[in-house]
Amino acid sequence: MDYFNYRDGILHAEDIPLPDIAEEVGTPVYIYSAATFVRHYRVFADAFQSQPGFEDTLICYSAKANGNLATLALLAREGAGVDVVSEGELRKALRAGVSPEKIVFSGVGKTTTEMAYGLKAGILQFNVESEPELQALSQIAQELGQTADISLRINPDVDANTHAKISTGRAEDKFGVPWSRAREIYAYAAGLPGLKISGMDAHIGSQLTELAPFKAAFQRLGELVHDLRSDGHEIKHLDLGGGLGIPYGDGDDPPLPTDYAGMVMQATHNLGCRLIFEPGRLIAGNSGILLSRVIYVKEGEDRKFLILDAAMNDLIRPAMYDAYHTLVPVAEPAGNYREVYDIVGPVCESSDTFAKARSLTPIQAGDLVAFRSAGAYGAVMASEYNGRPLVPEVMVHGDKWAVIRPRPDYDELLGRDRVPDWLSMN
Image (tube, rainbow, N blue to C red):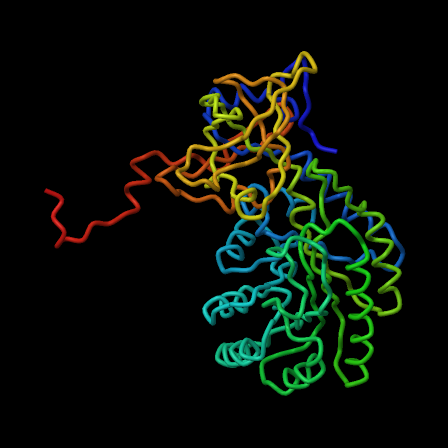
Protein backbone atom coordinates (compact mmCIF):
# COMPACT_ATOMS: atom_id res chain seq x y z
CA MET A 1 0.00 0.00 0.00
CA ASP A 2 1.18 3.52 -0.80
CA TYR A 3 -0.30 7.00 -0.76
CA PHE A 4 -0.19 7.79 -4.49
CA ASN A 5 -3.78 7.61 -5.72
CA TYR A 6 -6.15 9.18 -8.22
CA ARG A 7 -8.61 11.74 -6.88
CA ASP A 8 -11.07 13.50 -9.14
CA GLY A 9 -9.16 12.16 -12.13
CA ILE A 10 -5.70 13.42 -11.06
CA LEU A 11 -2.87 11.45 -9.45
CA HIS A 12 -2.06 12.75 -5.96
CA ALA A 13 0.78 12.27 -3.52
CA GLU A 14 -1.17 12.05 -0.26
CA ASP A 15 -3.33 15.22 -0.46
CA ILE A 16 -1.26 17.06 -3.08
CA PRO A 17 -2.17 16.99 -6.81
CA LEU A 18 1.01 16.19 -8.73
CA PRO A 19 0.45 18.97 -11.32
CA ASP A 20 0.77 21.51 -8.47
CA ILE A 21 4.31 20.33 -7.78
CA ALA A 22 5.20 20.19 -11.47
CA GLU A 23 3.97 23.74 -11.93
CA GLU A 24 6.23 25.12 -9.20
CA VAL A 25 9.29 22.84 -9.31
CA GLY A 26 9.30 21.70 -12.93
CA THR A 27 10.01 18.22 -14.21
CA PRO A 28 11.57 15.75 -13.88
CA VAL A 29 11.21 15.62 -10.10
CA TYR A 30 11.22 12.89 -7.45
CA ILE A 31 8.24 13.04 -5.11
CA TYR A 32 8.13 11.09 -1.85
CA SER A 33 5.23 10.31 0.45
CA ALA A 34 6.18 10.63 4.13
CA ALA A 35 3.17 8.55 5.14
CA THR A 36 4.31 5.69 2.91
CA PHE A 37 7.84 5.75 4.33
CA VAL A 38 6.44 5.58 7.87
CA ARG A 39 3.94 2.86 7.05
CA HIS A 40 6.51 0.61 5.41
CA TYR A 41 8.96 1.07 8.28
CA ARG A 42 6.32 0.26 10.86
CA VAL A 43 5.06 -2.82 9.02
CA PHE A 44 8.57 -4.28 8.90
CA ALA A 45 9.51 -3.30 12.46
CA ASP A 46 6.22 -4.50 13.94
CA ALA A 47 6.60 -7.89 12.27
CA PHE A 48 9.47 -8.52 14.69
CA GLN A 49 8.96 -6.27 17.67
CA SER A 50 5.46 -7.62 18.34
CA GLN A 51 6.91 -11.10 18.90
CA PRO A 52 8.06 -12.27 22.37
CA GLY A 53 11.85 -12.35 22.57
CA PHE A 54 12.36 -10.07 19.58
CA GLU A 55 11.35 -6.73 21.11
CA ASP A 56 14.98 -5.53 21.01
CA THR A 57 15.32 -6.02 17.25
CA LEU A 58 17.10 -3.06 15.62
CA ILE A 59 15.99 -1.87 12.18
CA CYS A 60 18.89 -0.02 10.51
CA TYR A 61 17.48 1.57 7.37
CA SER A 62 19.93 1.27 4.48
CA ALA A 63 20.88 4.84 3.56
CA LYS A 64 22.15 3.86 0.13
CA ALA A 65 18.56 3.27 -1.00
CA ASN A 66 17.53 6.88 -0.42
CA GLY A 67 19.85 8.97 1.71
CA ASN A 68 18.20 12.38 1.68
CA LEU A 69 18.48 14.10 5.06
CA ALA A 70 14.70 14.45 5.20
CA THR A 71 14.25 10.71 4.67
CA LEU A 72 16.76 9.88 7.40
CA ALA A 73 15.23 12.41 9.81
CA LEU A 74 11.74 11.04 9.17
CA LEU A 75 12.83 7.47 9.95
CA ALA A 76 14.97 8.53 12.91
CA ARG A 77 11.82 9.99 14.44
CA GLU A 78 10.30 6.50 14.15
CA GLY A 79 13.23 5.04 16.09
CA ALA A 80 15.14 3.63 13.12
CA GLY A 81 18.86 3.12 13.05
CA VAL A 82 20.85 3.44 9.83
CA ASP A 83 23.19 1.21 7.84
CA VAL A 84 25.87 3.33 6.14
CA VAL A 85 28.58 2.49 3.62
CA SER A 86 30.58 5.72 3.55
CA GLU A 87 31.60 8.66 5.70
CA GLY A 88 29.19 10.83 3.76
CA GLU A 89 26.26 8.59 4.65
CA LEU A 90 27.45 8.47 8.27
CA ARG A 91 27.61 12.25 8.43
CA LYS A 92 24.12 12.46 6.96
CA ALA A 93 22.74 9.98 9.51
CA LEU A 94 24.25 11.93 12.40
CA ARG A 95 23.05 15.26 10.99
CA ALA A 96 19.54 13.78 10.67
CA GLY A 97 19.50 12.93 14.37
CA VAL A 98 20.18 9.20 14.28
CA SER A 99 21.77 7.97 17.50
CA PRO A 100 25.35 6.70 16.91
CA GLU A 101 24.45 3.59 18.91
CA LYS A 102 21.98 2.73 16.14
CA ILE A 103 24.44 3.03 13.23
CA VAL A 104 26.27 0.14 11.59
CA PHE A 105 29.05 0.77 9.06
CA SER A 106 29.16 -1.70 6.15
CA GLY A 107 31.06 -1.85 2.86
CA VAL A 108 34.11 -3.61 1.44
CA GLY A 109 36.31 -0.54 1.02
CA LYS A 110 36.23 1.55 4.17
CA THR A 111 39.21 3.89 4.29
CA THR A 112 41.18 4.55 7.46
CA THR A 113 39.79 8.09 7.50
CA GLU A 114 36.25 6.70 7.45
CA MET A 115 37.11 4.19 10.17
CA ALA A 116 38.49 6.95 12.39
CA TYR A 117 35.37 9.06 11.88
CA GLY A 118 33.14 6.13 12.80
CA LEU A 119 35.16 5.37 15.92
CA LYS A 120 35.08 8.98 17.09
CA ALA A 121 31.33 9.09 16.46
CA GLY A 122 30.78 6.04 18.68
CA ILE A 123 28.81 3.90 16.22
CA LEU A 124 27.34 0.53 17.19
CA GLN A 125 29.58 -1.67 15.04
CA PHE A 126 31.67 -2.07 11.93
CA ASN A 127 30.65 -4.88 9.58
CA VAL A 128 34.12 -6.01 8.50
CA GLU A 129 34.60 -7.78 5.17
CA SER A 130 38.28 -8.81 4.92
CA GLU A 131 41.49 -9.50 6.84
CA PRO A 132 43.20 -6.32 5.53
CA GLU A 133 40.24 -4.33 6.83
CA LEU A 134 40.64 -6.00 10.24
CA GLN A 135 44.30 -4.99 10.29
CA ALA A 136 43.55 -1.40 9.32
CA LEU A 137 40.72 -1.02 11.83
CA SER A 138 42.89 -2.49 14.59
CA GLN A 139 45.65 0.01 13.85
CA ILE A 140 43.30 3.01 13.78
CA ALA A 141 41.57 1.93 16.99
CA GLN A 142 44.92 1.66 18.77
CA GLU A 143 46.05 5.06 17.52
CA LEU A 144 42.84 6.61 18.86
CA GLY A 145 42.94 4.65 22.10
CA GLN A 146 39.52 3.15 21.39
CA THR A 147 37.97 -0.26 20.86
CA ALA A 148 36.02 -1.03 17.69
CA ASP A 149 33.02 -3.34 18.02
CA ILE A 150 32.97 -5.58 14.98
CA SER A 151 30.87 -8.16 13.21
CA LEU A 152 32.41 -10.12 10.38
CA ARG A 153 30.34 -10.22 7.23
CA ILE A 154 30.02 -13.85 6.26
CA ASN A 155 29.49 -14.88 2.66
CA PRO A 156 27.27 -17.97 3.07
CA ASP A 157 27.68 -18.92 -0.61
CA VAL A 158 23.94 -18.91 -1.27
CA ASP A 159 22.49 -17.89 -4.63
CA ALA A 160 19.79 -15.29 -3.98
CA ASN A 161 18.11 -15.93 -7.36
CA THR A 162 18.05 -12.22 -8.10
CA HIS A 163 19.67 -10.02 -10.76
CA ALA A 164 23.40 -10.74 -11.07
CA LYS A 165 24.31 -7.11 -10.36
CA ILE A 166 22.50 -7.11 -6.99
CA SER A 167 23.44 -10.60 -5.80
CA THR A 168 26.00 -10.41 -3.00
CA GLY A 169 26.16 -13.78 -1.24
CA ARG A 170 27.75 -16.19 -3.72
CA ALA A 171 31.32 -17.43 -3.52
CA GLU A 172 32.31 -15.34 -6.56
CA ASP A 173 30.88 -12.08 -5.15
CA LYS A 174 33.23 -9.47 -3.67
CA PHE A 175 31.40 -9.16 -0.38
CA GLY A 176 32.19 -10.77 2.96
CA VAL A 177 34.70 -13.32 4.18
CA PRO A 178 34.55 -16.83 2.73
CA TRP A 179 32.29 -19.29 4.51
CA SER A 180 35.05 -21.89 4.48
CA ARG A 181 37.46 -19.60 6.38
CA ALA A 182 35.05 -17.93 8.78
CA ARG A 183 36.25 -19.64 11.97
CA GLU A 184 39.87 -19.02 11.02
CA ILE A 185 39.29 -15.31 10.40
CA TYR A 186 37.29 -14.90 13.62
CA ALA A 187 40.24 -16.42 15.49
CA TYR A 188 42.56 -13.96 13.74
CA ALA A 189 40.30 -11.01 14.63
CA ALA A 190 40.18 -12.08 18.28
CA GLY A 191 43.97 -11.76 18.48
CA LEU A 192 44.12 -8.20 17.13
CA PRO A 193 44.31 -5.32 19.63
CA GLY A 194 41.67 -2.63 19.57
CA LEU A 195 38.93 -4.93 18.26
CA LYS A 196 36.01 -6.51 20.09
CA ILE A 197 33.98 -9.20 18.38
CA SER A 198 30.29 -8.60 19.01
CA GLY A 199 28.46 -10.43 16.28
CA MET A 200 28.05 -11.68 12.75
CA ASP A 201 26.71 -10.04 9.59
CA ALA A 202 25.38 -11.28 6.25
CA HIS A 203 23.55 -9.84 3.26
CA ILE A 204 22.94 -12.12 0.28
CA GLY A 205 21.40 -9.70 -2.21
CA SER A 206 18.66 -7.26 -3.06
CA GLN A 207 15.11 -7.55 -4.43
CA LEU A 208 14.62 -11.17 -3.36
CA THR A 209 11.12 -12.40 -4.14
CA GLU A 210 11.17 -15.77 -2.36
CA LEU A 211 12.09 -16.90 1.15
CA ALA A 212 14.10 -20.03 0.30
CA PRO A 213 17.48 -18.28 -0.24
CA PHE A 214 17.07 -16.34 3.01
CA LYS A 215 16.22 -19.52 4.90
CA ALA A 216 19.21 -21.42 3.51
CA ALA A 217 21.57 -18.57 4.41
CA PHE A 218 20.19 -18.01 7.90
CA GLN A 219 20.34 -21.69 8.75
CA ARG A 220 24.01 -21.77 7.76
CA LEU A 221 24.66 -18.69 9.86
CA GLY A 222 22.94 -20.27 12.85
CA GLU A 223 25.24 -23.28 12.64
CA LEU A 224 28.24 -20.96 12.48
CA VAL A 225 27.08 -19.02 15.56
CA HIS A 226 27.17 -22.26 17.57
CA ASP A 227 30.61 -23.13 16.18
CA LEU A 228 32.03 -19.71 16.98
CA ARG A 229 30.69 -19.79 20.51
CA SER A 230 32.31 -23.18 21.00
CA ASP A 231 35.55 -21.51 19.86
CA GLY A 232 35.15 -18.98 22.66
CA HIS A 233 33.75 -15.99 20.74
CA GLU A 234 30.92 -13.88 22.08
CA ILE A 235 28.25 -13.48 19.41
CA LYS A 236 25.65 -11.06 20.73
CA HIS A 237 24.42 -9.48 17.49
CA LEU A 238 23.24 -11.20 14.33
CA ASP A 239 22.91 -8.71 11.46
CA LEU A 240 20.86 -10.38 8.72
CA GLY A 241 21.06 -7.50 6.23
CA GLY A 242 18.16 -6.59 3.99
CA GLY A 243 17.08 -7.72 0.55
CA LEU A 244 13.36 -8.48 0.83
CA GLY A 245 11.84 -7.38 -2.47
CA ILE A 246 8.93 -5.10 -3.31
CA PRO A 247 6.24 -5.33 -6.01
CA TYR A 248 7.29 -3.32 -9.05
CA GLY A 249 4.25 -4.26 -11.13
CA ASP A 250 6.15 -6.76 -13.25
CA GLY A 251 4.34 -9.83 -11.92
CA ASP A 252 6.63 -10.54 -8.97
CA ASP A 253 4.82 -11.07 -5.69
CA PRO A 254 7.39 -10.87 -2.87
CA PRO A 255 6.64 -12.37 0.56
CA LEU A 256 5.05 -10.14 3.15
CA PRO A 257 7.24 -8.86 6.01
CA THR A 258 5.18 -11.00 8.41
CA ASP A 259 6.04 -14.13 6.41
CA TYR A 260 9.69 -13.11 6.32
CA ALA A 261 9.67 -12.49 10.07
CA GLY A 262 8.13 -15.88 10.73
CA MET A 263 10.90 -17.58 8.76
CA VAL A 264 13.60 -15.55 10.55
CA MET A 265 12.20 -16.33 13.99
CA GLN A 266 12.08 -20.03 13.17
CA ALA A 267 15.72 -19.95 12.02
CA THR A 268 17.12 -17.85 14.88
CA HIS A 269 14.92 -18.32 17.96
CA ASN A 270 17.43 -20.60 19.70
CA LEU A 271 20.49 -18.38 19.15
CA GLY A 272 19.89 -15.77 21.84
CA CYS A 273 21.15 -12.97 19.56
CA ARG A 274 19.89 -9.45 19.16
CA LEU A 275 18.76 -9.24 15.55
CA ILE A 276 19.70 -6.35 13.27
CA PHE A 277 18.19 -5.76 9.83
CA GLU A 278 19.15 -3.37 7.03
CA PRO A 279 16.06 -2.88 4.84
CA GLY A 280 16.29 -0.11 2.26
CA ARG A 281 14.26 -0.74 -0.88
CA LEU A 282 11.46 -2.32 1.20
CA ILE A 283 10.92 0.99 2.99
CA ALA A 284 11.78 3.50 0.27
CA GLY A 285 10.91 1.82 -3.03
CA ASN A 286 7.17 2.38 -3.20
CA SER A 287 7.42 5.59 -1.17
CA GLY A 288 8.49 7.61 -4.20
CA ILE A 289 7.70 8.35 -7.83
CA LEU A 290 9.58 10.12 -10.60
CA LEU A 291 7.33 12.71 -12.23
CA SER A 292 8.15 13.54 -15.85
CA ARG A 293 6.64 15.35 -18.81
CA VAL A 294 6.35 14.06 -22.36
CA ILE A 295 8.37 16.23 -24.73
CA TYR A 296 7.41 14.53 -27.99
CA VAL A 297 5.50 11.55 -29.30
CA LYS A 298 7.65 10.35 -32.18
CA GLU A 299 6.39 8.15 -35.00
CA GLY A 300 9.11 5.62 -35.82
CA GLU A 301 9.33 3.12 -38.68
CA ASP A 302 7.45 0.42 -36.80
CA ARG A 303 6.69 1.90 -33.37
CA LYS A 304 5.88 5.01 -31.40
CA PHE A 305 8.32 6.62 -28.99
CA LEU A 306 7.39 8.57 -25.90
CA ILE A 307 10.30 10.99 -25.45
CA LEU A 308 10.32 12.22 -21.86
CA ASP A 309 12.21 14.99 -20.10
CA ALA A 310 13.44 12.38 -17.60
CA ALA A 311 16.47 10.37 -18.66
CA MET A 312 18.75 7.56 -17.61
CA ASN A 313 20.85 10.00 -15.60
CA ASP A 314 17.74 10.67 -13.47
CA LEU A 315 16.63 7.03 -13.11
CA ILE A 316 19.35 4.61 -14.15
CA ARG A 317 17.82 1.36 -12.90
CA PRO A 318 16.24 0.33 -16.25
CA ALA A 319 19.51 0.94 -18.13
CA MET A 320 21.68 -0.75 -15.47
CA TYR A 321 19.46 -3.62 -14.29
CA ASP A 322 16.78 -3.93 -16.99
CA ALA A 323 14.52 -2.88 -14.11
CA TYR A 324 10.77 -2.55 -14.55
CA HIS A 325 8.90 0.56 -13.40
CA THR A 326 5.19 0.97 -13.98
CA LEU A 327 4.47 4.20 -15.90
CA VAL A 328 1.11 5.87 -15.32
CA PRO A 329 -0.43 9.09 -16.66
CA VAL A 330 -1.11 11.79 -14.09
CA ALA A 331 -4.52 12.42 -15.66
CA GLU A 332 -6.56 9.29 -14.99
CA PRO A 333 -7.36 7.44 -18.24
CA ALA A 334 -10.99 7.64 -19.32
CA GLY A 335 -11.15 4.53 -21.49
CA ASN A 336 -9.56 1.15 -22.16
CA TYR A 337 -8.05 1.81 -25.60
CA ARG A 338 -4.30 1.29 -25.54
CA GLU A 339 -1.29 1.96 -27.74
CA VAL A 340 2.20 0.49 -27.65
CA TYR A 341 5.20 2.74 -27.01
CA ASP A 342 8.91 2.60 -26.40
CA ILE A 343 9.54 4.98 -23.50
CA VAL A 344 12.83 6.85 -23.81
CA GLY A 345 14.70 9.88 -22.53
CA PRO A 346 16.67 12.66 -24.28
CA VAL A 347 20.20 11.48 -23.37
CA CYS A 348 22.43 10.56 -26.31
CA GLU A 349 22.69 6.85 -25.47
CA SER A 350 20.69 3.96 -26.86
CA SER A 351 20.51 2.64 -23.29
CA ASP A 352 18.47 5.73 -22.33
CA THR A 353 15.36 3.56 -22.61
CA PHE A 354 12.92 3.01 -19.76
CA ALA A 355 10.70 0.43 -21.45
CA LYS A 356 10.09 -1.22 -24.80
CA ALA A 357 6.72 -2.13 -26.27
CA ARG A 358 4.83 -0.87 -23.22
CA SER A 359 1.04 -0.90 -23.61
CA LEU A 360 -0.47 2.37 -22.33
CA THR A 361 -3.55 4.48 -22.77
CA PRO A 362 -2.84 7.14 -25.43
CA ILE A 363 -0.31 9.75 -24.34
CA GLN A 364 0.19 13.19 -25.86
CA ALA A 365 3.09 15.66 -25.89
CA GLY A 366 2.93 17.80 -22.77
CA ASP A 367 1.26 15.12 -20.64
CA LEU A 368 2.59 14.40 -17.17
CA VAL A 369 3.51 10.80 -16.40
CA ALA A 370 4.85 9.11 -13.29
CA PHE A 371 7.25 6.22 -12.80
CA ARG A 372 6.04 4.33 -9.76
CA SER A 373 8.24 2.49 -7.24
CA ALA A 374 11.07 4.99 -7.79
CA GLY A 375 11.82 5.90 -4.18
CA ALA A 376 14.82 3.57 -3.86
CA TYR A 377 18.00 3.73 -5.95
CA GLY A 378 16.61 6.60 -7.97
CA ALA A 379 17.78 10.04 -6.87
CA VAL A 380 20.77 8.59 -5.01
CA MET A 381 22.15 7.17 -8.26
CA ALA A 382 21.39 10.22 -10.41
CA SER A 383 24.13 12.10 -12.23
CA GLU A 384 24.63 15.19 -14.37
CA TYR A 385 25.49 13.28 -17.53
CA ASN A 386 24.99 15.30 -20.73
CA GLY A 387 25.18 18.48 -18.64
CA ARG A 388 21.75 17.86 -17.14
CA PRO A 389 21.24 19.32 -13.64
CA LEU A 390 20.52 16.84 -10.87
CA VAL A 391 16.86 16.00 -10.51
CA PRO A 392 15.24 17.66 -7.47
CA GLU A 393 13.44 15.87 -4.63
CA VAL A 394 10.19 16.78 -2.91
CA MET A 395 8.58 15.29 0.22
CA VAL A 396 4.85 15.40 0.82
CA HIS A 397 3.23 15.23 4.26
CA GLY A 398 -0.56 15.30 4.08
CA ASP A 399 -1.53 18.62 2.53
CA LYS A 400 1.99 20.07 2.84
CA TRP A 401 5.02 19.61 0.68
CA ALA A 402 8.59 20.87 0.56
CA VAL A 403 11.59 20.71 -1.74
CA ILE A 404 14.15 18.60 0.12
CA ARG A 405 16.85 18.87 -2.56
CA PRO A 406 16.57 21.70 -5.09
CA ARG A 407 17.43 21.43 -8.75
CA PRO A 408 20.78 23.20 -9.33
CA ASP A 409 20.64 26.06 -11.78
CA TYR A 410 23.12 26.26 -14.64
CA ASP A 411 25.36 28.71 -12.79
CA GLU A 412 25.78 26.09 -10.03
CA LEU A 413 26.37 23.36 -12.59
CA LEU A 414 29.06 25.35 -14.41
CA GLY A 415 30.50 26.70 -11.17
CA ARG A 416 31.67 23.27 -10.05
CA ASP A 417 34.21 23.13 -12.86
CA ARG A 418 37.56 24.92 -12.71
CA VAL A 419 39.57 26.12 -15.70
CA PRO A 420 43.32 26.29 -14.90
CA ASP A 421 45.07 29.65 -15.22
CA TRP A 422 47.29 28.40 -17.99
CA LEU A 423 44.31 27.53 -20.18
CA SER A 424 43.12 30.83 -21.61
CA MET A 425 39.37 31.33 -21.92
CA ASN A 426 39.85 34.24 -24.34
